[in-house]
Image (tube, rainbow, N blue to C red; front, side):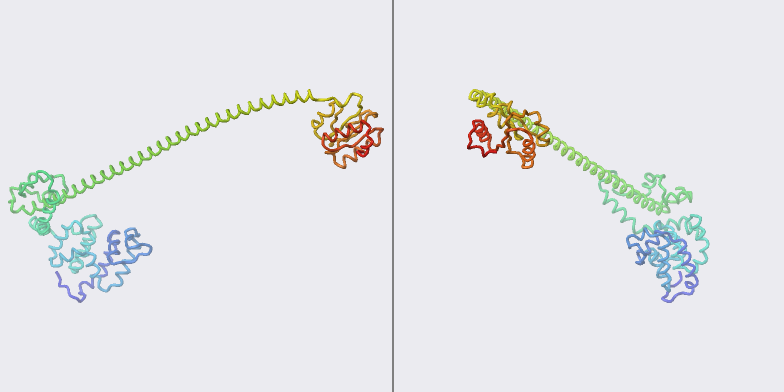
Length: 432
C-alpha cells in the first residue's frame, strides 16, 4: 500500500475528481441518506430522522455541495468506508481485495472507494473493470484478482478467528435449553453429519467452485472450511431462531390482541345486555305506573260518576220541589211580553215561557218583532242592552202604537217592577 502522509499525494490529486464523479454516479439512495445523517447535512423539508424519505436528487445535491467544500476528499471517503478501512489499511492490495470480498455487509460503492483511498494508483488501473462489473450486476471485484483455495480459506479463517469463539459461546449461553447439544464439538464430524446442502452459504460456494474431495485434502487443510461452515450455521441458526421467536412473539401478540378484542366484545355485550335489562325493567316499571294511573283514573271517574249521579238526583229533586213551590203569578189575562238580549233562563222562574222573547242585537229590532200585536204591553230588559241599541228600540216603538217600558236590575227586581206596573202602582211611573 502507498504510504499516507498529511500531504495530499500526487496520485490522489490526479484521480480525486474522477473518484468523486464515479461515487456520485453509483452511490445508492440508502447510502446517500446515511451519509447525510453521519455528516449532518441539511436537506430542505426533511429532518435528520426523515432523510431516508428525501428524494435522491435532493440528497445528491446536498452531498455534492458538501464534497465541493472539501479540499481533500479522502477525509470524506474514510468516513464513508468506516469502519472497514480501519481494519484494512495495512493490507496489501491482493489481501484488501480478498478481505473486502468476504465482507457481506460492505456495499459495492464502499469497495470501490476503499481501493481509491488506499490504492489510488491501482484504482485508475482497475476503474473500468469495476464499473463494468457494477453495470453488469456482478461483484465489483470480479476479475481483479485470482485467489487459490488456500488463500480463500486463510482469508475466512482470519476473518472469523476472533469472532467464532465468542459467537459459539454467546449462542450456547442464549440457548442452553436446546436439546442434543454435544459437550465438545468435533468440527470434522459436525461438518460431515450436520451441514445441510440446501443453504446458500460461502462454504458451499467454495465446495462447488473448487470441487472439493476429502481424499484430495486433509482435515487440517479443510479445517478453516469447517470453521467457516460452523460460523455460517451458527449465524443461520441464530437468525432462524430469532425469526421463529419473532413469529412466536408476533403470534402471542396477535393472540393477546385477539383476547383483548374478545374481552372488549364481551364487555360491550354485557353492557348491552345490562342496558337492555335496565330498559326492560324501566318499561315494566312504566307499564306498572301506567296501570296504576289507569286504575286511579278509573277510580276517580267512578267516583265522579257517583257524585254526578248524586248531583243529578239532587237537581231533579230540587227541580221537583221548585215546580211544587212555583206560584203562577201571571195569568193569561196579563197581556204583556218581556224582551231580553240576556240569557232567557235567568227569567224563566218568574215569567211564563210564552211571554218571554229573546232579542238578538246583531239584527234589527223591527225585523225580529214586527209580528207583535199593537195592543200588547212590552217590557224591554236593558241590563245587557247598549245605549245605541236602546235608542234604536225606542225609535221603533215610538213609531208604533205600543205601550212599552224599559226595565233593568236583577231578575227579582225586574219581576217586581212588572208586577207593580201591572197593578197600576202610580209610584213606579218613573221606571219609564
